[in-house]
Length: 174
Image 1 (spheres, one colour):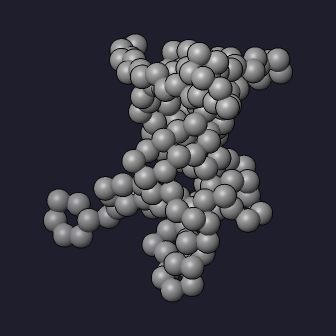
Image 2 (tube, rainbow, N blue to C red):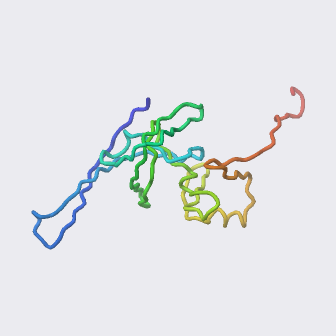
Image 3 (cartoon, rainbow, N blue to C red):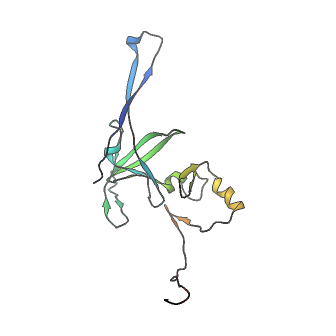
């Protein structure tokens, strides 16, 4: 199992009315660092319960539904939670399925939003990075640029129906 290192800090939020400091109401919020991978094959944003802040509210899984891994393995789904994620550039809310996973994953399908409606965000990849952009960027690019390959959304996966043949080399030694 992957060893998890928990980096925590505590932020204190205060509400002050017209009173002296002895009457200040304060709430401590635990902040943890989490490393999240963007995954086009993940059907939901998932995180292990051990990676959550201690004060995260877990809504238990009462449906009995579980996740199935790519190797058909059972992945326990404990429930749902919501968190705030902060990067150097932005602060966003994130809903998570709390599950027995080794790596926190953001689902491209969840980040982009449901199919056949205006999207939440666009997700773009290159060989160095993945970026989440305002909605409509991909549609604008497709007006000007022919894609090399296109994968259509089918549920929470992006699928291409392709023809395949063997790679034939020309010349001797074939």
